[in-house]
Structures are given as C-alpha cells and as structure tokens.
Image 1 (cartoon, one colour):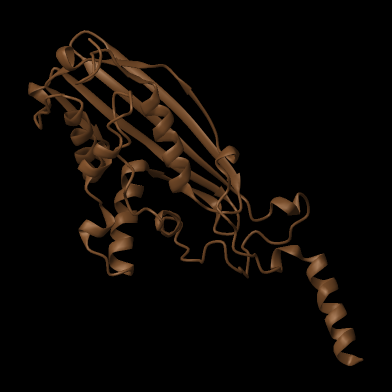
Image 2 (cartoon, rainbow, N blue to C red; image 1 turned 90 degrees about the horizontal axis):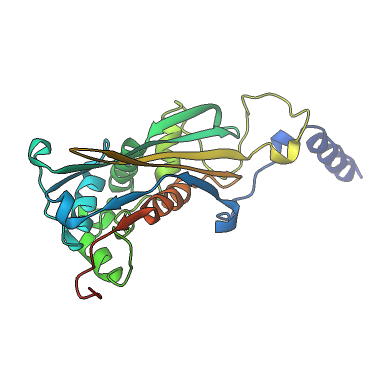
Length: 256
C-alpha cells in the first residue's frame, strides 16, 4: 500500500513538473519536417569561369571536395585567387536555440561546425582521417548522372557528432536526446509539449564573382524538433543551394 501511494505521488509530481521527465531518445525527424526557402540563382560556365577558385569558408575539407567536384565537371581549378577568372564561395552559419542544452542559443560558422565534427569523430571514436572523410572522387562517380553543375560534394563525411560539437560552444557538455535533469530554464508554464524541441537553422550564402558581375544564392533552412540533427538540416540547405546552380555548358558526353 505504501509503495502504491509513493508511486502515485511520484507520478503526480512528474505531471506537475514535466521538465523533470526523462526524455526518450528521439528518432531523426522525417525530411518533410525540414522547411527551406531560397532566393537567387547562379549560372556557371566552364569556358567563362575557368580557372576558378572555390572555397567553403572556414573548412579546408569542404573546400577541397568542392574543388574536386568542379574539376569533375571539367573546370580548371586554381589555388591562387588572384589568377582565377571567377571565385565561387560557400559561407554561412548554423544556429540552435531551445531545449535544455541550447536554451541560451548558439551560432557557429558552417565550416567550423564541419571541421569540429570531423575532429571530434576522429578523437572520440578512434577513427582515421580516411574514415571520417571518404574519398570525394567516389561521391563524384556515384553522382555522375546528375545534371547539376556540382555534385553533392559534402556527402560521405562523418558528421554524426555535429550536435555534440555545437553543444560544446555553449559550454555545456550534456547528452543529446537523452534523459536530462537540472534544466536551467526552470519550470515549464506553457507549451510544455515543445519543452525539449530545438530550433535548428542554417543560413547559407553561395556567391560567384567574376570580373564583371556577382551572382548570389541565399538559402534559409529550418527544423523544429526534439532530435538535434543539424547535419540533416545542413545537408538539406546545401542540396537546395547547389540545385540553384546551373551549368550552362554541355556536360561531357551529353548532347551538344
């Protein structure tokens, strides 16, 4: 009888303070839960824009893979910006706000988030560099049938540690999508069903600058969910951005 009473009191206590309930591991959200909108487009030409200098801001890994993806489409690549006929730049930020871990919010450059994720994966899982960065050439070959100007150069990277890497930027090393206690936000008074959800946003800018003009694409991609999966939001944003880049030359082996 005493056990039953105590159990009933405990259940009532959790009902009164829902933020103390253990949070079950959340499944990755469906792709449809991610929303995205983009503005602008880019027309790129092997003849007009080669040699081209390509860069993903603050990420040597992504910059190299972007250059390899462009080379696979027939572009001449230069490592000297001054000698380039055009400069293609990807830059942006990942922002997380909400839930116990990101109640104060965090915003990190995309390049920094990727490099930190790769380093964390290598250090914590005893992986080699080749394990966390698969060969970009394989990605290009697998995507050879795509009609886009650039293959998905960011795929094949070990980015499952990105949520943890971004969490370190807040100064809180907490578990993600696990039971959490000591929530710094206090007591939930309204919208308690969203108490553990996190706003996950990617701001992406892609620019092509040549001697006479600048073309630019801006992408805003969002997810509001319990599962903290910034890598999925980033993948969606990059795909939308790349899809807005059109190669105006005939692809090798394609119709003239």
